Image (cartoon, rainbow, N blue to C red):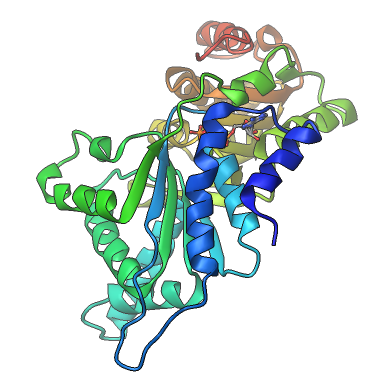
Length: 352
Ligand SMILES: Nc1ncnc2c1ncn2[C@@H]1O[C@H](COP(=O)(O)OP(=O)(O)OP(=O)(O)O)[C@@H](O)[C@H]1O
Ligand SMILES: [Mg+2]
């Protein structure tokens, strides 16, 4: 079994990572969990299984390496069963499981769902914990308790301190006991690195590729591999009861084609939800727009506005330079703003 500290050292030595004191300081905290789980489980005749070690709630600014460290931790677990999952994707799974349990007449619908999680994983690694509605808040609170009782350790990354979760949310007082539980069950640690590595990776690198062709495709693929750093999954966002799908998502980076996002009947709420969820969007194959694809053009304007407001980094391939994307048809005047934003968003300091 390779320990986390030596995994980190190897990646620093081969130049994959730059050494970072704040990141190194996190390693022993993950290592503590791995060591505790590696111990053989002591189960007496009359004794219950000993409680799991405290989990870890790793929080801090964007691009500091939280998800990267968590992935590395999961890799270091070797044969200890672990699951790494994006928080939203996991919650959707929980909702679906509860729905099914209810249909089967189970009164406490969360119990079987939690039991099956506990059976499959001793470590549950959540990426990007955030709570945006009270239903999730209430479910998560109880779920964490059940996982803890069942011996499954939770590790999670977040951009907020637990005290700031579901901040200003409706009926927040109902959520406060859960915050206390998080603090009891998980060690809260802030990763205070001065470096935003995501921004660093993008610095000086082109982010707008034109024209569309093999060269642009290859460049996009290489930026994506560099930023996402692993196998991506689709991310499905629930917006006003509808499902909005991003075909590939990992570590805050999403990849979609122009058609995926602007060729479908999506509207401002959908684009805002995407902008809220995603830190970098890789958008491929923006075509030349005209009268013939006016609706697509309109959606594209809305999408860019949402990304701009949300300070989402955009990396794209397009048939032409921003100013030449939409030169005839209704709304060309409005498109000037979009073109100007597309230019501004290429600036390496943009969004900081
Ligand atoms: N020490 C490092 N040296 C080089 N690259 C790094 C280092 N730490 C992280 N990175 C890279 O920086 C990018 C951002 O890291 P990561 O996704 O882990 O950040 P994060 O803290 O999870 O950010 P967010 O809060 O936005 O999710 C990734 O591509 C990651 O591989
Ligand atoms: Mg992250």
